[in-house]
Image 1: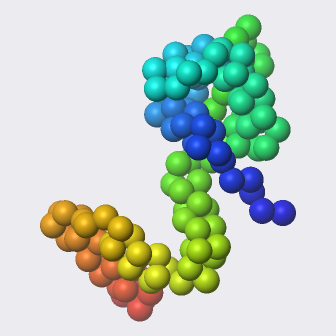
Image 2: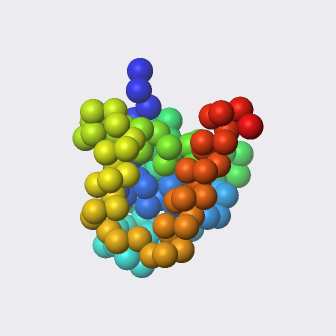
Length: 128
């Protein structure tokens, strides 16, 4: 069974948890409510849903439950990109990159970083 895809609001919550390591509902609400019109109970419900989906883990040892992301940010991002590659680009990472470069013009620094990543990938794939 494929891992559930986080919704945009769930991704916002995961970002808070990745930044903090762990947080209570109140802490998540304080950060999330700056940009969104969401109440404390809404955040609580989302965290409960995310726990059921396996996106977050909860520690109930304390009076205030403490939540943390189940997976690191990089793992979640890698899965999301893989999903996009298969759903939108017929499994072609090259098509994803081409469309990404056409959608947003990268800076010279970003182009240099992309070239470096490609060089590193090529070296690793050749076993050097």
